[in-house]
Length: 305
Image 1 (tube, rainbow, N blue to C red):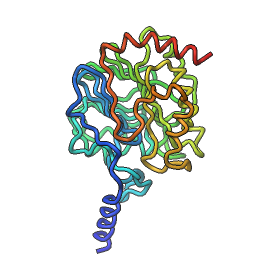
Image 2: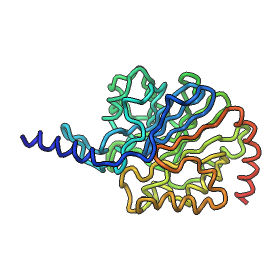
Image 3: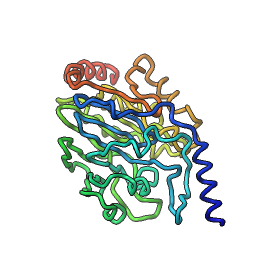
Image 4: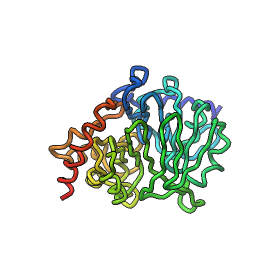
């Protein structure tokens, strides 16, 4: 009886969590462009000329430690902008690190298994038996290509243990590339100048996706909004998609603080922040990528001076 009552209470609490401001509609996304949809927290769905990539999936009411049928940890404050039943089968599911809010085993268990699961090093004991068609671990500088998308692990300023004191594990950002389009994904990083190396590449970044939350008091692990904008400018990317904000309460910053401060930091260039709400979508026709890259690199260079 106690178990049944607890389940009913959990279901009632989940029902009261508000819907995302917008719902993603990947069924309407074309195959001839780059499409990005923000599901919530660090969960992003990308479609790169027909190939779906899903990052750090979290689809349930809580993230944290599983005890029987229950999860002990932070509760969502907004539902995912794409329910599991409407999720298209991704070619690859990409995990950045082993923290509970990025490597949610319950969400991974619920995904289609005819896909490739990509993770950092030393995570096989957690992920290797989940039943995915392919499982690949990448260290910094290593890459794998899945349905035409090259996925390269890149360094970030974070840490990878499942919890403090646990065994060491890898932790990654990623560079996604296909047909000349390049997307940087670094959902969990403190400020670092590591992304400057992309600024002068022959093929500039089209989009940088940076984490923008849980910086108070965790500034040594997560960049604050002003630092996010600085890393974006230093990367030379055309557009910015901020993630990892206002989905779970993981820091002391008020709801809305991260986006307000990021827009203020951007000032007159705030239009380059192309997704500002959970459920937001953004599209880049591939014909625009090369055309706009050079002009934006010059603009970023001016802002770095």
